[in-house]
Length: 114
Image 1 (cartoon, one colour):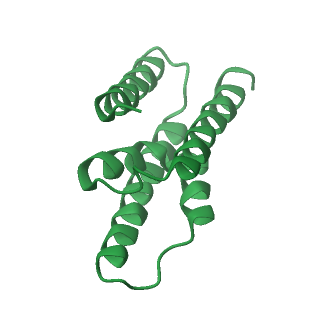
Image 2 (tube, rainbow, N blue to C red):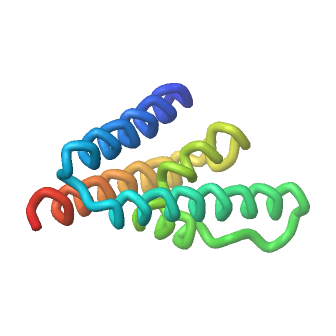
């Protein structure tokens, strides 16, 4: 996926969350959770990139995907673009975007159906 498209989607998502919060559709706790998970997502991908550069033992891909699915995809997406990390392996890319989709579906159910 084009790196700019990934950044646009992440930014648009944050804009929708802010708008939903401003019209009282979403709890501040949900916003805080998403922002904390975004930070965690960025840090985990950053650490994995540094470990890769040093030829150290890496963070397992399933953990990276779990962080993305749990809401860290916004920060992870920023790290992927900024650090050029985890961008070439097709199987990881597919699983990553499935994790992002899963997170968006779960967020929809949590926010708008409950």
